[in-house]
Length: 264
Image 1 (cartoon, rainbow, N blue to C red):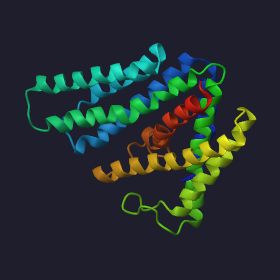
Image 2 (image 1 turned 90 degrees about the vertical axis):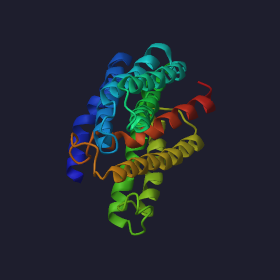
Image 3 (image 1 turned 180 degrees about the horizontal axis):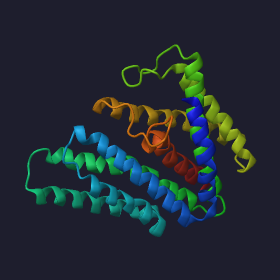
């Protein structure tokens, strides 16, 4: 399992960094691909709860968010949300079916909010003048290093279960490992970003905590619908959503921390 993760990372990370640094348009295409596949995996996993979920419409509407942020900035998100909610309600009304009406609309909208809305902030982060590409690399680096710390330290020394009803393999030792490794990653990131040490440590702790929260939340969803992973496209990880679950939570947190503390 760990070998598969290493091999995947060795092939994927250079491509990821290249697309981040290459251009904003190339990065938009990458983000839309991640969101599109993640939404597809989410809706397929949720079909047990709602057989008539609007998964095609959900994917198309979800892709409006990163494209809208790319074209008009994050201020367009509330407008898009209003449009999406109205569209989905109208879509359900046109069916003239009462059965599972609320579930269909709620799960379709929930996928858009959970995946597309949260991850679209990576476009705003990339758009920050002069620093955007390095900030994106940093949040990926710190989040995934924290995930690796939780996996390795929890796997070797984890004895005290954290939330066994949600994720029986997660431990307090792994959680602490995620915090420590995320902090180390943020300290390392000072090689290409001039963060004061105190802010690097604060962001390391926040990314470590919120990243694990994202992982736990996805585990909760999978346990609810009785699946192990949302997909199988990535060896050793599961699906795209399984790989990016932590980033869905850390990206908006990191963006607003940078924006509020540094006034960017």
